[in-house]
Image (cartoon, rainbow, N blue to C red):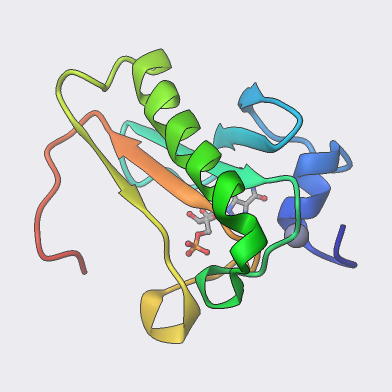
Length: 115
Ligand code: 5GP
Ligand code: ZN
C-alpha cells in the first residue's frame, strides 16, 4: 500500500466504494463520476503507479485484470452490445489517479477518436 494513494485506500476498504467484484489480486468498483451508464474501474491490490511503471513480474496480474474486466462486462450486462476498456497514463493520457486502473465503459455507443 502506497502512502496517501486513493485507490490503495479503496482496495484496503479504508475508503468506501461501490464494489462490484473483488478477489485476492484485484478490486472492481463503480466510478464516482461515471462517463457512461456502466463505468467500472478495475484495480490491482498491488500499488502499480501506471502503465509506465510496469514490471515483467506484473505479466500474470495484467492478464488477470483483463479477464476480470471481461467478466465484469458480462456481470453488468454490457457484453453482448459491446463495451470499451481504457487505461490512461501520464499527462497526455489524462491519468488523474496514479494507481493503475482499467476503465470498463458501456451502456451507450462510444465515439472514436476519444477526446
Ligand atoms: P483516470 O483519469 O486516472 O484514468 O481515472 C480516474 C477515475 O477515478 C476517474 O474516472 C474518476 O471519476 C475516478 N475516481 C476518482 N476518485 C474516486 C473515488 O474516490 N471513488 C471512485 N469510485 N472513483 C473515483
Ligand atoms: Zn495505490
